Amino acid sequence: MVKILDCKLRMMWYDGAIMMAKTQITLETEMQRRARQRANDLGVSLAEYFRRLLARDLARPETAAHVDRIFDLGTSGGSDIASHKDSMIAEAFRSTRRKPRRR
Image (tube, rainbow, N blue to C red; front, side, top):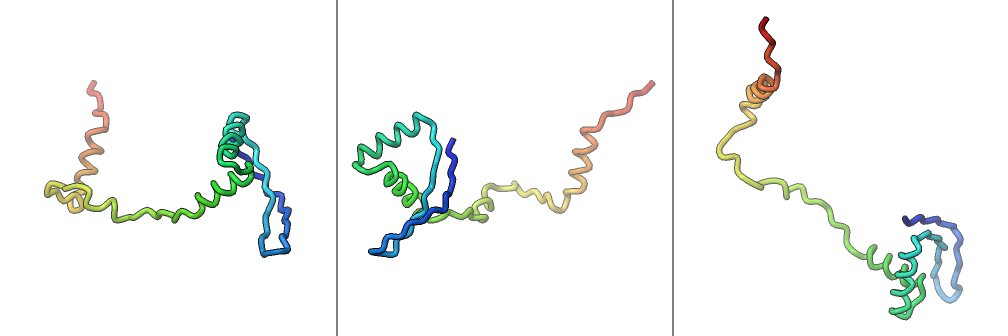
């Protein structure tokens, strides 16, 4: 479970135009331990490790779903469902109805 709270605290670095917002997250104990270990292995702080992860994730281009991927997936075998849909629906409906009991 990760909960992110934006504290809206900003700090200004006067030698440049870098502004940062302080953010607090809550991690499960094991996830925090593993993240600290990974940051240590990389020789960076936990905060820098998270910044790098976010920068890498946000730098990836967004992939949009291409609608044309669903067309021409197969063949209809020559059937023309559009012209006979009403009769096909009626037939399917009739086949699911219970037949009345005769007494």
